[in-house]
Length: 335
Figure 1 (cartoon, rainbow, N blue to C red):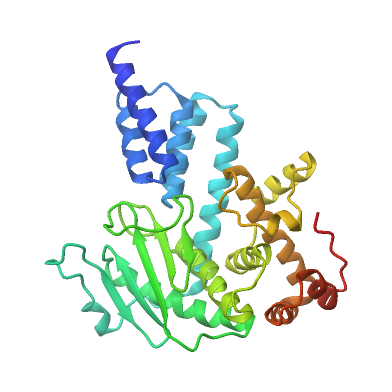
Figure 2 (tube, one colour):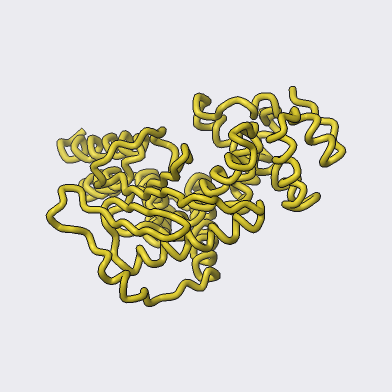
């Protein structure tokens, strides 16, 4: 192997390590550095596309997948990623277009600029519904869009669950590529609710708003479920409701569930009642998808009104199997 190929391989290996640690911008930089030295591997272009997918740069991802297909037209991995990223791009761009955000911020937003003398400049916005901090600071227009999305989340998710927090909700949005704060959550997680909503993204610029809004709806649902059940909601119902409220399952996720069903590896409700954090990445993925599919079927069957009644029974310490039978007339087998 030549020195050039060895150096290229070193970049590719470093890129893969960065990707596994959710350091997607560094992964992209290493992939690009390696490709300057060695352009012969189709799977490197496919992996670079996946890194661009994780930072919400759909067009770059699709462009590199096209290059991968030129090198290996029959690769099932490349075709699978191409289909997935096209679907993601369409979905996330359409939900932002449908949100009909007001383009021009009011004058007071123009003055929400980071103090350049601060070591860790932030954007901070206070509203009657929320207090938002963003690190590092974003462009005022992006911040204005995010604030509109938070208000929409407050109204839309609140209306579905008939729950509106009495107190101002604390929200932090952090770009892990260059923020200085330490985040106490798994590297694979993009958000959490622990009395405070934390959303993270990794990008060398502004966040992808469609993805960010989906994360916001997901964690806001956790906030409301916590209020409605006094923190006693089963894991599968909590995560499934958060996912079902945030967005529908996409076709590649339904295919993953179908494959798990054919393999006999779908988790039971008893297994889904345990925290997902300590499972393998593949098992965790299926656990989230299965939970969302179960809750989506409950919503399709009887609407959010029945979900609210179910959460009320849980708040009153009714066991989940009895609560499901009372609301949906279902005898549930948990294992």
